[in-house]
Amino acid sequence: MTPDELSGLLAAFPATSLGHFPTPIDATPRLGGKLGLGLSVKRDDATGLAFGGNKVRQLEFYFGKALAQNADTVLITGAVQSNYVRTAAAAAAKLGLRCHVQLEDRVPLYNESYVNSGNTLLNKLLGAIVHTYPEGEDEAGADARLHEIADEDRRNGFNPYVIPLGPGNPPTGGLGYVACAIELAQQVDDIESFDAFVVPSGSGMTHGGFLVGLRAMGIKTPVYGICVRRGADVQAERIVNNCQNIEELLGAPSTVTAVDVNTSDAVLSPGYGQLNDATFEAVLMAARTEGLMLDTVYSGRALAGLVHLADKGVIAAGSKVLFLHTGGTPALFGYSEVLNDRLAIEIPAE
Image (cartoon, rainbow, N blue to C red; front, side, top):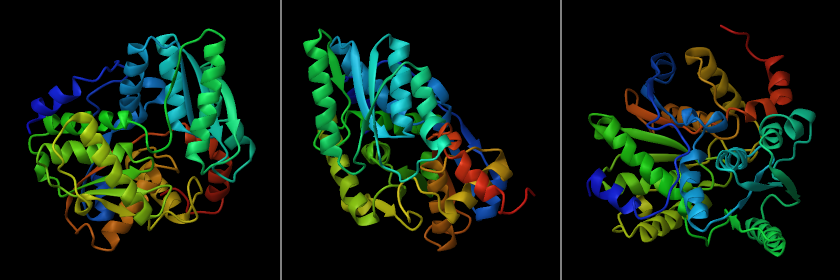
């Protein structure tokens, strides 16, 4: 399938413009040199809306659907420092909609900066109505609670639209990364000159949509998903299901198989949102070689995963690699106390 043909399938879905596209691709020779790779970075941190990030692409389709249903309110769930929640609150403000955000207790961190800075501060500035949910691993329960809030809004005369968290819902957000794959294919002279793509893998909509887009266009380059929340086996199953659901939603031929799904959890411990040595070192490396800011939850952990894959020879020395920077920069401030504690004892600036 050509990029234009795949774009034609996407055109059937309502979408609203929220971001700055195409995002740039930056050569990063100093960072790549540290890893022994020809490394480029697709800058989806530069999507523009309220500090940008990958969720802008996904939300263009969710908000397109909400507007098509004449919604005046959107509801969404995420972790306390969720970039998704912050971006949804920004999109709602931009479009003149009310926004409920539900913050899960997903990370065992309760210091001042985590609770009140970073994305949580931005949610308040953006005018979101903030709720909390006590469980961090109960996607179905969190979705059910959002629907209860939506029902209450309906009784009060509003027309709410729920952006779901858990599986079993249409993978609307994945369409944004099918669009990203098309954008990339149109942006570079020869996309198949890359030996590998590396992406964070959390909800799986970025990883799954990107993989579907590439394979639908016949691009067979390996995509490595670095696990940020679940173990590799569980995440691989989630990505396979997401890909099948995205293909079905698009009406595209089924081209992704389990063999196409590469997941690595080598840098996941001790778990989602908890800083480990590998991630801290990757965040420092990007900052001190390229002036590139990575967050500690998604993009920093993904770079740590790429370091591991390069060290182990899974991605061979000298390979040409594209790293997808999914943003999340405001979360750095949510982790400022944790980072400052590390910086006080770690290596000095070069």
